[in-house]
Image (tube, rainbow, N blue to C red; front, side, top):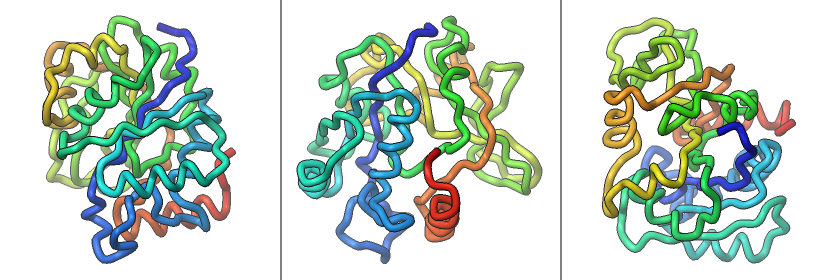
Length: 235
């Protein structure tokens, strides 16, 4: 599948618990970074990748997102699908599919950016895969969720407990609509349920991309994103 992908789902239904105490009562997508709501930066980035239509899989304070969208000039068409109960990342994506029109879609976390991502590489990745996951190298000592790779194939998602270089989930994916439709409705996680299952079947491929992976889900990550965007913007 090397054709252009024009739709993206943004997973922005989380409570922002890692930012608790900052911007209380505001959805994470509207937290200000480098002088603008984070979602404004993310929509500019998605437009740069060729996306023309975005579906927000929203949850916490979805009403605030609706008000912001209606009062803001946006670079792409935006729709909101609000969940009525917490569904997890895979459940929210499955729920948002009702408002996705195409046969192929991008999916991105609602708190991350990959400024150096080359979308042509994601589009050109093997059509044998049921999902394409971006992988970002972490050269510094790193612990946490990591990817085990054999060539371009993701063989496992692991919880790393030792220091050293590692491949990290970049939080940006390409999925065929039919794959998402095959998932049962209800609460489930991409990272804990869907991707490990696909990796176990040899159907999850990695597209390696360069750092940085900007993640505003923590106070330190938000500051690093703020510094980067003030200096570089979204080119």
